[in-house]
Length: 354
Image (cartoon, rainbow, N blue to C red; front, side):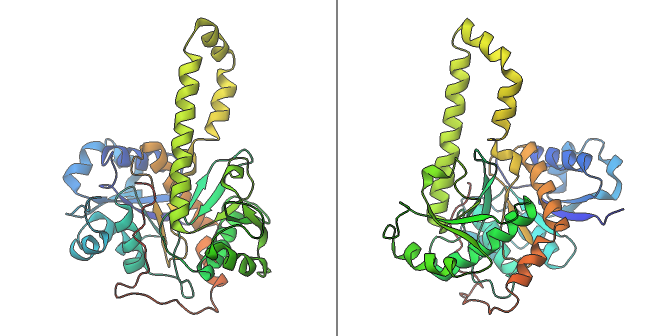
């Protein structure tokens, strides 16, 4: 029997905690016998939603944490002061080697800061980016950085590209992922100083299938497998992408229900329509891994319900079984770590997914 993948899950983080978080954990344990989940949080708030969890035996454990970090708190100060919070306790389980991964739908800033402080970076990695999978016509696309580092150097974008390429190759089975820099045009003279300086660095990297610039409008069509950018641009693109998708879906549903003719047509194509829409459902892809850390940290949507939590846990299982962390460590084994501030982090207080 394969070794259990152990995941610490922040039961108190997110808009729908703890009910949907616990429900997602139970769903994941039902789907995979090779998964062990530590539900980290306030026991008396978690236990009412466990039901008949005894059927999972020691694959489900509640780990007490008396404090909760809210989205209104300053991330660095909250992580420093609330040492018994569900985020800090969960990430320390990873650092101690008691868990292989940590998942949270809670405060993005606290998850990012805690990941840098308590889990730590792989040697040679200067900044740890968030890589989030977004849907496209050709399959999932990795957007990296999706909001962890708002100010970066060209060399950081090169590292993001290399980590993103490894991740897509191993997690999605893409042999030579097409890597592109997000830009306002595809012409060589287009863009700001950052992308103009980063482009030749990516082009000179032999282990990258670098295809040049990609415009935002080409991403939904699958114009690249890995889209590289700073966290500021990435977060803007991600939220516009999610907002536009939600609006289009709402308009489509309204149209299909607007007349008897449309209702009949919708009934005839219901099965195919659901299958098509499923490919554009971001919750199918789980959360966003923080790549480049010494252990896996995954940030789920703040609004996550059970389905996305379940998929985030299964995502950790794939990450571990495909040895993605080891592959990224090997990639940077010869490189020196970058500069850090007094907290051991760079500018990591950007917001990913609320």
